[in-house]
Length: 426
Image 1 (cartoon, one colour):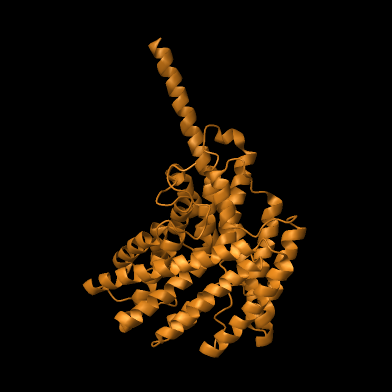
Image 2 (image 1 turned 180 degrees about the vertical axis):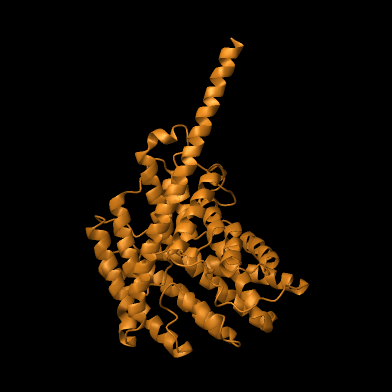
């Protein structure tokens, strides 16, 4: 009997190893498909946004409103009334095995996202990228059920999400960590680690093969000084300030999502008046259209360029950006809040730096990004890794970890999304 039992167990192990290899290979395929899709999506958004940026100011002021109208039409006609949610869709599907991410909804949301973001909506490209990757991964796994017998139903869902984030930010480690970290508060989805890493790397490779490998913020951040002991105390102050700011921003976004149940004409009117007003105020205060777009220009053309910015002006721009993101959500815009959190953190970090150590503002700005993003999405590891990968400079990591921990503690149970769960929660 023993030889037969041994032979049976050996065959089972061989089948398991073979199936695991197939899963990893399919995760790599998911990454390649996602990387290609994200690149096409990014090109579409940038092409539209470039036209808006070159247009007269009056068109730039009303462009986000036009984008919201087109997005609403896309969601209603193509998607048969589907919601504008993106990242929340990934979290919903992660926690509910019966919830499916359909192709029709995917096409509708991507079309709406191009209209929203290309026209200057104050949301990020990562939401549709994460959602698109997870939807593609789920579709592949659903059509190849036999290859995943005994595997978790979320394997390629997570792999695709990781690849989407990795591609749009050109940050493979961030993509994998974020996809594993964001479904829970204070925990990780550890069982999908290997497929997420493989898909994230292949998605990144595919994307940069079609663009470039330059880190997202490498060309805009001046050399970051080595941190000093007093910077650790500054990091704690940034952590507390960012947690308070993130709590306020999260509440604002939740309120905006709550208003989406109202009639579209009412929501559009509210969003239109707000966005046009914010555009005018931004031009008056800074001479730039900082209320438009995902917010990269706030960093590349303002925070990392201006050597002396008044704290009151930083607070004003923080409010402008936060309200612009919320107004875009109220109007039914499709996009993510990852980048708005990044921008909010950069502004708060710079404000604290102006008070504590003005000549080291780049270091404090980056610490703020890690703390604010980590607190808002409850992903401290992904937040620190994001700044490390997108700048290509590790000088800030130690104080950023201090800030991220402080921010996470002060944040409490609050989060930017209600679809996250606590460890062990059903």
